[in-house]
Image (cartoon, rainbow, N blue to C red):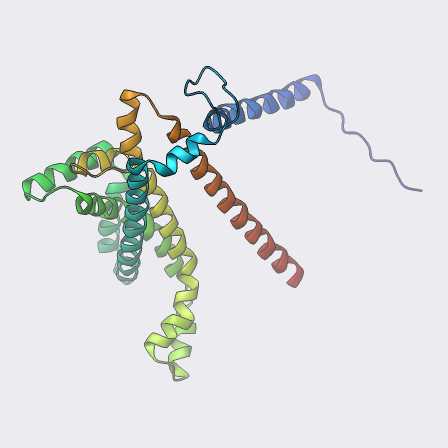
Length: 277
């Protein structure tokens, strides 16, 4: 005979706490995703006014792709994020190798200096870089924003790659050299696969931070250069256009799809590891 599972007794206080936790979790989801859901609905609204539903329409998406200003801002944002993340990843990875070989005191000092742009307030970093460009008489534009984004992206790469370097087993690399492999071949086959997750993490973090930045971009950009964040900020004074709702919806859906793909891939890898064990 199958034994019946005993029901665990829960006091009224425990039930109240459990119900309160569910309500709290529900409110968090409402506050986090309620505005996003509203934005998505408004992107399909025929009417230009937020308080009135004029029927389902895709005209704001058509208007979005025909808007030259928004498309230029989107292209500038993506190009800036990609270049700054790529350059910061290369420089940060090289810096991580150098810092990994340093002694404790110089390494601690350099880590502190490297982490300042990350720990410092964005407005302080933005104003400081703006004053630096003015003092050097550097013409502010796309290149100045690129340099600024590389500056605050470097710490994220270093913090992602350096722990991976500490976990590397040096004896495996030395064994590859003893077996006749060149330093470059041994690096590609032994060290690089171990630090690749850290490099990818640093790149994605840098790309996301650059894509989302407003304050530093606002202080270091020149005339005629606009990213999505600065473009939307300028549009707020006149009134946000419905095309911005459509653009935000597309970006949210793209990020959501990427997260689903990554989580499914990680889930499959975990299942393979469990089955192999």
